[in-house]
Amino acid sequence: MRFSFITIFISLFIGCSNNDGAPPSVSLKETSLADSLARGRRFVDELLLMGALSDGVHKDAFVSENLKNIRRSVLGRVYLKDRSSRGVEVRENEVVDYYLKNKNSFVTGVPSAKIYHVFFENKDMADELVRVFGLSGKKQEKNEAFLKYNVKPELVFQNSLIKDLNDAVFNKKKKQLHGPIKSSFGYHVVFVLERFSKNFVPPLELLYDEIYLRLYQKKVSLRSLNILDSLITHTPNTVK
Image (cartoon, rainbow, N blue to C red; front, side, top):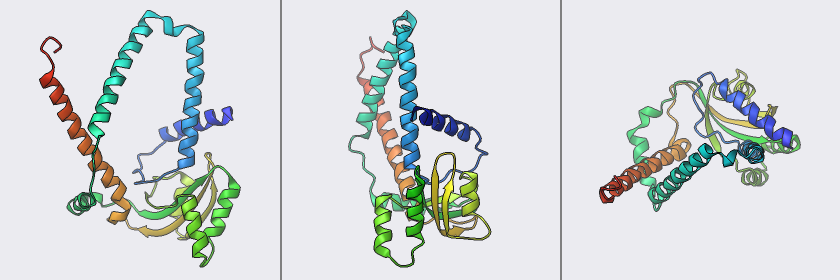
């Protein structure tokens, strides 16, 4: 288990460093991989902390002072994040308006595709989903699988995926169902719903989450500036 955590951590680091500048996927989510990576990072952090405490690094005067500064910075940032995000809302009409006004900015510069993509660490589970995807009819069984694995349509771009997935989605044979495709992270199942040319404008349904996040972050940023401005205004001159 420990070895697998470290292997995943290092593998992903190397994989990220080899990115050839491909455009990112709008919402490519590998939940199982993300969870494994998070556990791996926590494990590595614990190892390093144990080593530091064992060597008495925390007793060093320089380190101690830096820890105090870090604590002050973290407390301030947590306060600002909490205050600035409290009660922030983004309405559906705001998302729609943003999409309509900025449609041209979403034109894809490379071929893209709308897909279902599910990642597994277990091959048997991947095989089962391939079986369900391959069924003709059987809507109830498919719907149950969609709910179980949180399957949602995602927009991906050519060369934004690992090579084996990219070859499957954008190959000339135009197959719909692919998998299980084995990678260094596990097993992938991909179902291609639709392929688009490089000048395609994605529909709102594929961009909704991204636009929502943009608007949310913009509102939080503006509120953060207002909070900081208020703190500066009401801070005694002796502190300034």
